Amino acid sequence: MKQFLNVAIFGLSLKVMDQIKQMVILAMPQQVSIKWCNIAEKNIDLLLVNDVFFTSSNIQKIILQDVQAYLRLEKHEIYAGQITGDFLYYPFTQSAVLSDWIKNRFFDYGYLNKTKEYTPEFKKNDDGNELKTVSKVLDEVFIARNGFIQLMDTRGCFALVDTRTERIWMNEDNKLIQFTADMSQMYATGQFVNEFTQNRHAHDLRTQLWPILLNAGFNLEVSEQDCFMLNIWPQFSSSVERKNLLKMAACFAQGAKISDVKRYLNLTNDLVERFVSAALLIRLGQKIDADTVKFRLITSESETGQQLSIKGFFGKLRKKLGL
Image (cartoon, rainbow, N blue to C red; front, top):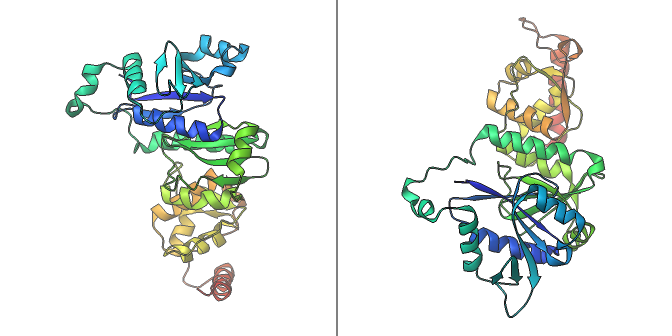
């Protein structure tokens, strides 16, 4: 049995699309996750398409090649919530009919009813799977030619990104933002962009993503022997880790070996690896060769000029920031 469905919706306004998504979520069996996808992706399990666009050559080609099942969406107040043939009529507030249709189309009733015996193979806490998904999405986010991209989870679109200007608009209705294996991206239409950005403020992309990724705890297979150069400083919010984050930034801004920074600042592997991984994911810096490193830990009884310089820098930094 499938543990998740790839679902695409096309040709609706943002408001209607969100309503349809909520109904799909409610209609889905409890054991099954949803991955919202773009119509350009392969292996779409369920396509929900506005009937106005159904006969277009592009949609017909997609249905023939990549779609397992589809429903044509048509607005009809009297038949709202009903399915007739391949038509699903909206708007609707209950999902029983859609739920039965999905179960009959994709799942076995008997298996679904054995909830106590069910052990999911799709695990949201699978770090490797999550990191692979998140890395893939962020790769698309930082390609300028991609234009506007929706960031999505099982509850729908939680953010809109303008890849050209590196701005992001957040969906305030989706307050719990987590980067998991359920995360996906799809290109946004002009109509979607106009509706989503209305009455919402744009934020700097990296500033918004930094705390989410830092707290997510991803590790991009960062080794203590790796060397890292920080090119863009993150914005550090007030937290118990802020002092150490600032110190790490100062070291890595010169280019530093990860083990040297950890030993010099007496920090845990976890914190340093989270810092470097988050910075790599949002392109704040890159790994560098050891011979280009400028910050070096000298193990001798007397302090070197460089170490004195670093301590002096930290002192000025603390004074400036009131630490």
